[in-house]
Length: 244
Image 1 (cartoon, rainbow, N blue to C red):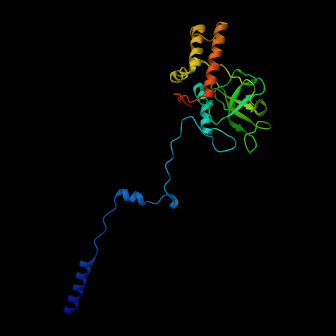
Image 2: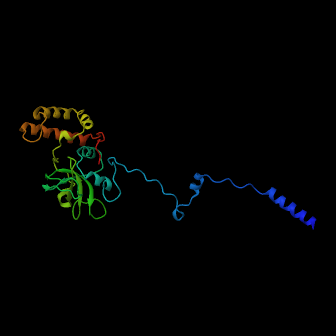
Image 3: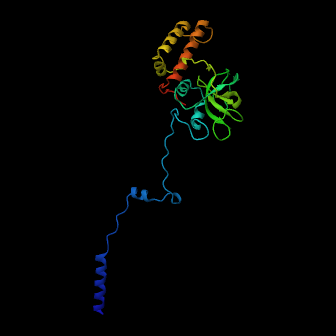
């Protein structure tokens, strides 16, 4: 009996000496890395920050539309400096031209357009509204959300705009006082703009709205024409400080 107990004791001692050491507890980082996600799915990728700059390429969809989130921000107010960049030489946005004198309005619910758009005025067609699939169409059903040279959004029916270029496209008045300093400096490097600017300053004496002389109005018009010519032919203006 004593011998049997002695054997059992030896077996117990042998098992105790050969057992592996207990694994070290996992660190909180390891536990988090191995923790299963909801329903066994992979961890969600971090969302890229929203781009607040001016788009330079077309969004997906029919025609060359700007991204919807940018359009919503742009048409919530008036951005004359953004317009000068988007109308610039080489930008992809379709140019449209008014087929008739049209009362401006903004279906996006932002800043309203209170003046008339002139016959042959040039606009940028930023988004189609209800056109059939297969590309941007100017005739038939639908219409467009467009941008004017003065930075205001306007909603146009398809009958009010064409892509056929008129002999002499028109533009609304471009007010020098609303152009940012950095963009003014870039524009004034052009000799024709600088000449028109000096003439406008001389004739208008710092006041170009309200009760002004005929010469002031003419000088102000020539300055706006010079800006449009430069933007269309050269472009490449610096990014505005105030963005949608």
